[in-house]
Image (cartoon, rainbow, N blue to C red; front, side, top):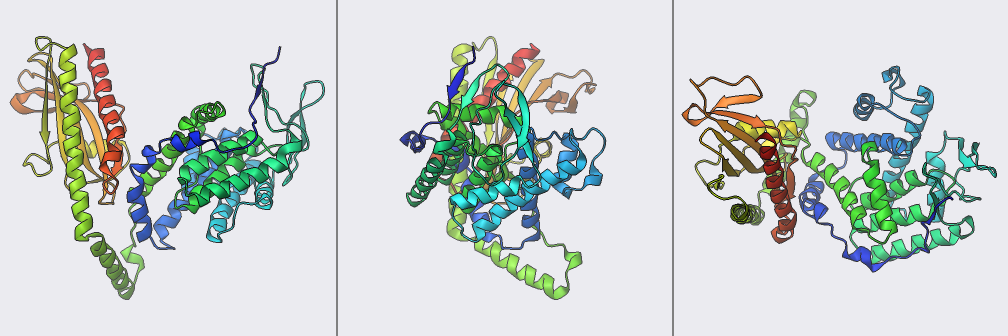
Length: 503
């Protein structure tokens, strides 16, 4: 017997959405908003960054909807270089190349149109939604449907029109998901637009509005096909209007995306808001790591002098005393908080691990310490591994949690706090693990990366799959503490697991 799940409920904004936490985005957003104010329209590097985001959105939105498959290599080439059919090789995609390029160009035109709509301050209306649907389906003429006998058949796609018949998808396990019946679509879309306008007027956080709107739109499922693509475009429009970036779901994140939507179906929206925050934070991290430069070789002396004057003014404006004092104060607070958390963690570990089994101790170096520059080589390697610029000209420091199992067998977890990218208010908290082993005659081991340490000990870097935790020093440090504490505790947990696996 087929199982049916009713997804659609009359559209409303439940106050539970207001209780969702957005700290994953709030931790970093202030650095982006300040940098955004410094960027001028027409910056070549920033415009190219936005074009790459648009191309990424155009590619991934079709992969998520199974319109086509693309291998990772050609995906990265298309994002970087643009949609050129001759870049495709045999096996790169599962549909005819011309059809693929047509789909990609439709999707790019649609997200580009969304950016233009934001510039024109055009509001979301029913007519706009229909226009956007027609845009993304220009070269899609058919879609799948189920006939009266339950067979999957191809039917003509209604472009720029709401659905005439039910479009309730069936999963492989036979489960049928029931969306809004066609008779109610018009009124539900009207209600969706009205509630959205009210939420904007109430100045609800944009990421919450965007996540709610996306979820509500998918519950209505107003079109015969293309609902997911439309939902992500409309969610993107809301975010872009508030100075953020397109909402792009990567193909390898589809399960997480679908799971978070289904949690919201059950009136648990936090996972969906979390995912929206993670996508936005990913984009912000990338733009903060973007070096905005003007190639000297392509400019005359007068042009370069103008650029120099402009950048010097921006730089001096950024060095305002009050702002620098705030950054310095917040950096110190972060170091003190990390020190507190790590001290408490070591104490807790000793409740589980007796000192005769292992010695655990904490060492540290704040930015003003003479040892602040230790581990510079490791930080450079760590930054390269995670594809960002480590700004060594700005204050940094570290914490070291040592695990001494014996004289011959020791580990040290190094937690580095340093500046991320080309923005002076963005910091990264990174972590790497090292194995220290007594060396005989100072010889290097053949396995892994090893170097000589004190007393001719061998120090080998061990892989820890821990991405940097990135924050803005222009945010309220008290609001940063919860996520930072979780990162530090998770790092200790992963480290203990790594050490345990080697004993």
